[in-house]
Image (cartoon, rainbow, N blue to C red; front, top):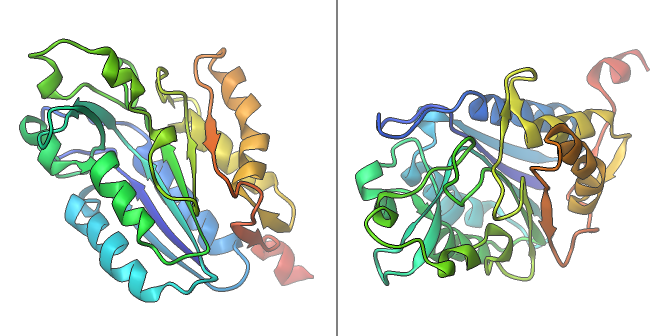
Length: 262
């Protein structure tokens, strides 16, 4: 059985955090696709904008999912929104964060989801066959995409240690694979012409074209990586890190219209 948590945040409660244009559309479209095309049992939880708070996301991953999962179940976690580098308030080291709807810019370190100390720990505790974390965000604070720099970095030097914090190398556990929209020094871009993030647009296109049968993280990456690179003139290069990349994550059934006339 597939359990999916699909999160997309375009609107942020704190006016100091720049709204995005298409992150919630990314999540809404992916959630709808999974509900219509995944074969067999599935449970899809889609959290958009004001519903995508830190507390709600944490409750799904630390309480609801662990009680529902079986050892043969698979988990897909998708996040579209801002990522941010910041100084970890607990130890003073650089860290990276997923920005939730209710994140407060001035207290980013405590009100966003710390990818190193929080999300990785939540994921490691999931009793699933495999967990796939797919992220359409970037975490280097560069201008022009789904990222911004945390306020704790403004008052201190931008150390080289910051460059070593990468979503692709987080300690999520051996059962977890990570597919990121871009490399650690790149920016996850949005595209007004297709009304999606560039990465998610190609993800949805790939899934719509996929034949009936199994889908793995490796098959997703193989089918979309070149398209993302081409669309961004090489500025955005998806990255896959997984020891179980070829293990099927879910199976696709035929289109509903085709099944109805079969």
